[in-house]
Length: 427
Image 1 (cartoon, rainbow, N blue to C red):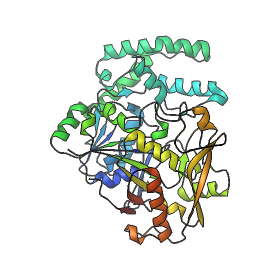
Image 2 (image 1 turned 30 degrees about the horizontal axis):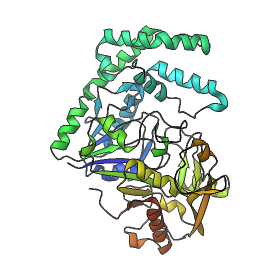
Image 3 (image 1 turned 45 degrees about the vertical axis):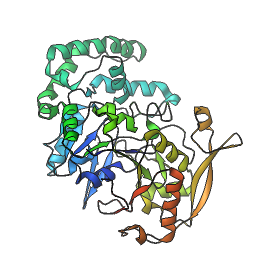
Image 4 (image 1 turned 90 degrees about the vertical axis):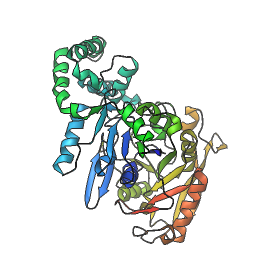
């Protein structure tokens, strides 16, 4: 019963979609277990580029069943729009399954997200404004709306009333906004019910039965380890658990069934939104990484902050996720640099620190300690094996592997589906 977890080992945007898509032809189920349409994946198939925000990347692999687990928050309008877009391009989306226990992003969640972020001013977190955080807050406060509630109008109305009792007070008295009508929200949500109904299922039962039948199940995390609500750079984090443990709670599969945990690492580091970033570059090297790597958020459209590879973060990701393998992406972007800096430790108040600081204050003041590695100028996009890479590129990969604490089993040398070097099979 091979169950694999695939997740970001940095701040997200590492290329998880490419990695998931690479495995898609070999797995039976691909499961999103947390997050919502604040997570974007770009997958290139032939000359076609697909930008996915909510749907699992496995939806592009024929024969694979894509699943949206109970830990995901679902915006029905985004879901239906994304499905429609794929259908128009000839992609079969009929096998999609959605957990009835997944929570719905309501219109008032989006409103609260946007006005709250504006109200914070300089203290803002840098959210996407898509209602993700407020929806998870409703879930924890036990006033959330679940997919299954769309099929009981009485229950749905009661839950919307309960949620808006407090939210309308906040919107009108604190933010000077107009109150939201219960009937308007209920009507909108009921309008999605029949369109979504064919996909709704008991996904916990489906996935556990699949594993008992020796099917291959891939759990796909959104965002990245350093954006985890518990283990990330709080408070500049997402509202869920992208780390490996989140796969168990977000999909309803026990930890003893997970056989492999794969971390996706970019050959350099990027981040979207606010928060500390020790290796961030503000010079022409940072601009070059952004330009060559096409570093613009799939979901947000925001330019990503760019910096050199941070081995401290990679080691941390290995530890908190129990990583068994790394998939190194975008190695080709580094072609052309004579010397490539790699952050091997931090300097904090005159001390050398080789592990991620426990204190947020210390991490905020961390300065990177770099080791310089020789670069390469040869085009590596046509490399099919590790030995095809220039010697300096091979040495760069080996150095990152040694510093990060887990074997690098695959390397991305270009954006295309076939531009990947597989060193060790993930299955």
